[in-house]
Length: 476
Image 1 (cartoon, rainbow, N blue to C red):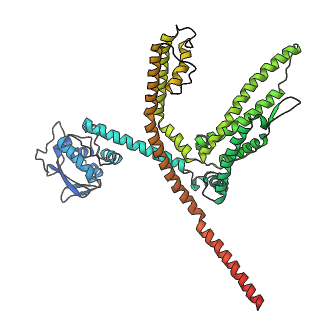
Image 2: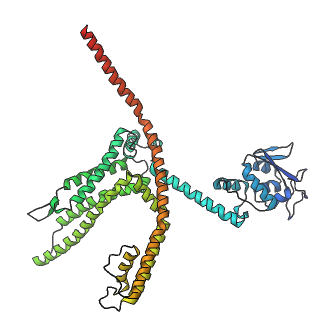
């Protein structure tokens, strides 16, 4: 492994004051020999600086150890990676092995000062693909683990007032398997969500509504049930807000945002109703003008109230806090936003293209519904989605051909992302379940149900023995 050459460096490089023209290196217990001239070609690398430096202290600072007897520099690094770097100094080309970890390989390259640009283009493309894939997988695993486990630990509460109480309250609200009370709290939260959704649906049934004969206002019979659920949701949200050690993370949490959206419409509705009742017509004018103004104002408030009532349906999203499948579905959409965005882009392009085609051949037909391209957007949308309501259909042969092409385009387009989304969803779901199972077992270990059961059994057996002893003494 010795390359004979003149120890004098070309291009003005300074020769190291050694008696040998060979640089002796020991990496991880394996010896390597390189000529000073081969190493000095790359003066920015670690070995290049070692060979070209005249400061002995600087040379010793570049290695882990040095043996003066054999003039050998020792490095406590991975010899498998250095074999590639050794070949790079010998040939000028940096090769990459598929079995090496990309992160570990980049760390070794950073230590030795060798840049990735010296690799061939084909190897560099494959390596960057594996590096990006590994980084994406690590990112996904971190986010999945963050969803499955509460990141807050007991140490974060030490600097806070009432640290012990807030720590127990946090476990009660966020870790359902930390205690029996926390498990009951999680079950109660799920039940209140289901009761709230059922009550919201039944309140729209006419038989479940009461009409006030005085002002003809409609009052749902299950309104008190809904108010009770809102009170529970509000208490739950406030307890989480009080117990959290990191307010910034709490505000940016998606699950906490869903909790806020679930209770906010109810209070906004109460606020609007209060203002609408207190807002009486003022100023000059006839009674008829005041009535018209009041009707207009009430109509606008009524539209806002309808929107507020509609937003109550978002309470069902609170089940995502207790459902692994819903969290995995949301996580899949968040991770696959590029594929989903491309899908919507292609759908929009298809709608614009086919609506313009059909309008061009159908707008001259008498009694046609394709009076403009915007009117044809609805037909193109339901055709691409393969729903096909049939309320608008082309009459000409060319229009029917365009309709067939639109439907075929929709079938192909809708089938493309299904496999990608499903595979990622199943993968994320299985990983999330595994992380949750690990966290549950860790939390359950704090409760020690086995010891509690043995204690109960011993107490029962002890009571039975005491009873038998009492009976035997009574018989004597």
